[in-house]
Length: 199
Image (tube, rainbow, N blue to C red):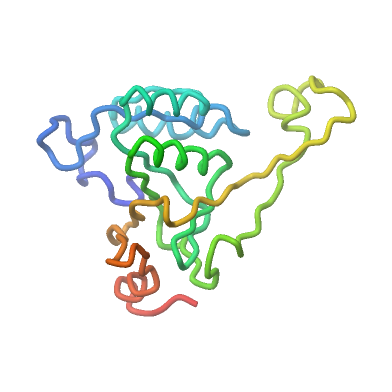
């Protein structure tokens, strides 16, 4: 978040609800995915920046939304296509579906370097697969086998969230919003903020 300039430039984030950028509670749902990114990285950043946070399992996010304890969802991005389709760690699309069902705004936070204007849509994003061992063995593939031998495995690293499910794209140069036609004009935004057009 600091990298994207979402803070106020100070060492800590606003502490009062009437201050711009105030975060009442952050729920970090990346605790179960391979590599435990949430537990290791995001949780550290939230604690370091004095943002109140609760670590939850990915599968608990829907229940939290149903209980009306979520005002908005912000996710990262590995790739953002020219139309706004976004590839991120597996499980992101599930969060988007839940957010849409419960009427919760869903934002992408990513540096401009994650935007690839050569990709017209998410259909052109190549989704790599992780090692089958991550699901077949304990400790993220490092431990003993716990699944039955002979079982098939599908273990994609990413999924793609369609632009129609995304409320806005937060970058270090500002927020990309949708025009009147409910489309993102990402190429125009990139051109204006960088002084040239990405290819």
